[in-house]
Image 1 (cartoon, rainbow, N blue to C red):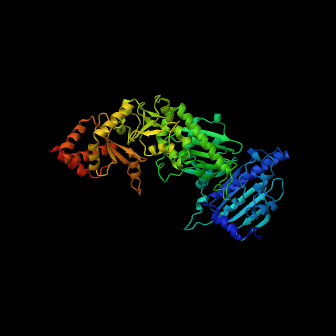
Image 2 (tube, rainbow, N blue to C red):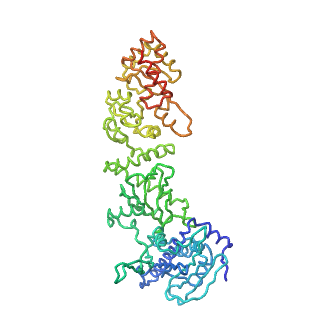
Length: 625
């Protein structure tokens, strides 16, 4: 018996027990090796001018045998000589595939993924004895390589009629900790091939057990074997777009991503040069049930030359485009030794950057040319775009700002920031917005009266993240965002400003009394310039608005914050006349009225009140007078 030419037996133990996280990977590795062997023979014959072989002559066969507990993988590729068996299988982590690729002149035409020479040893995860029968193309000799693991291996002559390699795995017995019987089941083998090796370019055959009515009997059935091709071979994403129907795209999406609805939009793209890849991306019609939860896991399926490497590669999608489903197939990626994870390199970043630009471009086309479709998309995933604007300190705001939609007070529909700016009045400097739980609630806010009177368009913000996103944007096309509940809208004429100053001085004592009566609940009480028909409203000063206060205080374990509240009173409303009379005649009752008006203003804003019972008793007391 020969010893492995490795640094130590521990290296093989590490590869068997630690490198691969899923035992089922072994079949992907062996099938990839078979595909590589056929690629090598095909390109070698092209170089030598041998036209006796073409790709249609190659295939792989899988044969499970439950009785013998063996699983056989056989190909008719280039095969190996005795020296190649010892060099490739006797030296751990030495790859004949990588050496072959490096010596080929036309590297771009060679798709070899077995570049590490350790994939073969994954077979020992499920097998206690691995036997390899191999005959090199053009050789008269065949050899058998056999190993039971770290103890070493033997190489002996054997009989094999055709060129190629046959690998026989003696499947380990099952235990209480782990079952290996599944790797002898036809349904399980079919599922693993479909998952990882569906797009290997050569057919993978297996004799499949089927049933049919027994001849001459109506009730009895008989079992028979039928040769079945387990893989589809030609990836949909490598076909020309004009060869693929909409139905094929949609069926692929349903089958691959288990969505009963057709996708809203399909993106089929490819690139060559510094980053070479094919990508097939889908925008779902609706958000998955767990999309806005911590449990949701983003990512695209990653293939290397048709062999799936990762189920969800998160690094290929930025968070704000995490709703995209699909796959990327590239031969340029640097994989780690187990091919289960990516090494973060320039190629991966290039692909991610190009996909980001492509997704944005497709969304813009949808927005400009298929508005109804885009609004359906935005209803499901617009919130994620807004989070994208707000996250990372606004790093992506310029990329995303033109994709945002907000409800318009004048258009009565969703509009973009660009559309809002295009309709601004000549003397209008700011983009006005107002926040609330819903469009219906916002429509009722007293603060909106002044802007309606002046014919100014407002953006209605109904998502909690909206105002934070606008703060991060800090303006659009040279125009600042202005909350209509802020203390100074700057809409008064010079005459109106003078009138406001006069009222401030005239009612100074009353306003100061009301402020003190509210015992620090408001920063100030003022005569409002924005109220027309309503008696009272709240506005705010400083960085934190009333709506932001509500959102921040609703967060778990967050420190409570409070906006600098300003109580605004309508001097033309009958209630204000009552306040003036009470100031002169009954300041105790005026204190009650101040608290009542303040509570009303809170309720109008949708802010909870501290003592509803006291509020109810106060109303009853006033009604009984």
